[in-house]
Length: 180
Ligand code: IMP
Image (cartoon, rainbow, N blue to C red):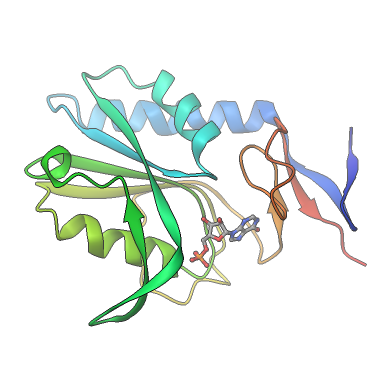
């Protein structure tokens, strides 16, 4: 299926499932080398990364753990301004560990910067970031991204875990909003 309509919007196929799968294998192979003598802990950020995290983790051949965190929908205040709190962050599972954060997409970069601040506060030995998608033209923050699946234009995408108003996550391919 090359196009789909979801709610009021039209989407076109953008990254087919076989390309996603191939790229995940490459990223996992690199991580398997980079962490060959370590026991890292992967932190998947819900909801968007659930499919990517599952497929990536199947290709990780290290003694590794995975756990999932969710950002609160409300915003609390901190010294740095408004932040969404990470639900499920247990400092004992992060403290002294090599941590790899798994995100679905980095758009403005604000979310990942908030997440990094909160993870760093739990005293990990190291932190690296993985994002399936990255929109360089949209990104306003200096986000350290260590492993990137695909750089994409500043346009809305969905599928493979990413949603439009809650829908569209259950697609093996990634779609992009059609231009009018
Ligand atoms: P950021 O804080 O602007 O980097 O936004 C990150 C979050 O916004 C992601 O984790 C997604 O939940 C959502 N998001 C940003 N761009 C898209 C998109 O194109 N499609 C679906 N969700 C997106």
